[in-house]
Length: 162
Image (tube, rainbow, N blue to C red; front, side):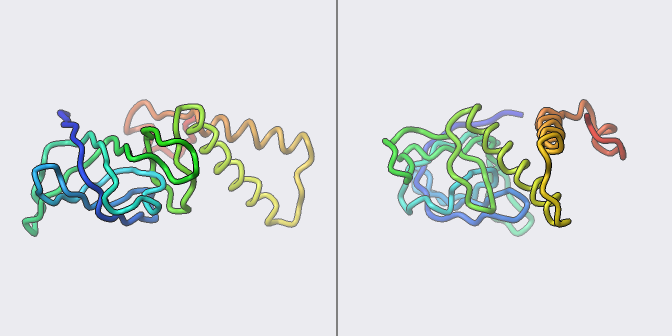
């Protein structure tokens, strides 16, 4: 699908439980727009921050409001972790996880979250994993993160994608 890339000013964002975010922006031409997509750390962005967005063409909802669906939302004003300002690609997290800067950091953050969830689930039964159990959980996490469904039938099947 065709996309357009543009810069705009950030107004506010609402992160959702399903990993998505609704971002309200003002485009350079002065028009206000609602953007749907993924943007980690958007809760820490400041009003007026500059964003760079790659999104599908403008659509109109049933209620007559215009919106766009973004594939990439970048805060080009910098981040707020004390690091030097640099463009960052952001992905949504309802838990407010730190901004992810590159593919290795993305994998590390996904690994950390998935591993934490599985270890926490294991330990909720009152057990502490042994080294071999920990290694087995690590292998499952890596399989989960590498899994890709080849088609919709695979995604709908009851079998795990790994």
